Image (cartoon, rainbow, N blue to C red):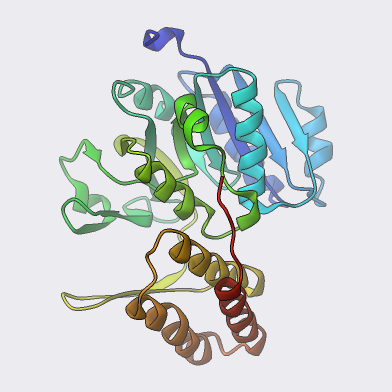
Length: 296
């Protein structure tokens, strides 16, 4: 294996109509204590001036395509970096802001690791984790910084949010599935990585900031349930992709069905009170049941 200083790294950022956040994200990569050799930005056909701004930047490699969602964006960006021969690919959405030593700290843990992730903190409240982390090995769910006091490494991650991938991963399991479009593509790729037997971990000293995920959580000794406040498009792909993935990886069961179909319906009616979102949820569910996708 090459020495840490010899490793080549490409950063991949996927963007769609969030030019203000994109500028902050790119600046946080430019000011890293260990700057990537190349920054690849995949523009999913933004219409808010993003392309014009990107074309003015001399230090960025820009790939503009029709809107293929986060999944299609990362597929394009990662494949580009892989074909250019980079040893590692550092991935994030345009709403991730990295601390200036985030990448440098990840690189200290390369030995025997194939996917390393920064800790993803809430942009609004840095004492909280933006998504939470569930460590299956110990059956623990971490939600706040105080929950991980004195923990240097957590054997879990929030994929595509400050994720550093070895090219070995792509050589052996392929690229993210653009067919998933958005919502769930990170879950499927995470399962694919684990199935292939690769090590994954979050390095708690390396940190990125991300807007807090809006959700309601019920968590006790007998029951765990999350309700995500999603718009119509994300609601459709969330439920569709969830059932596509659970079928593919033999995770489907009645408890899963009850929580992710009926309970979500209940909370859409009670909390969101939006008939369009409800229809999207039902359509996505039935589409997920009757569709089969072969992931790469």
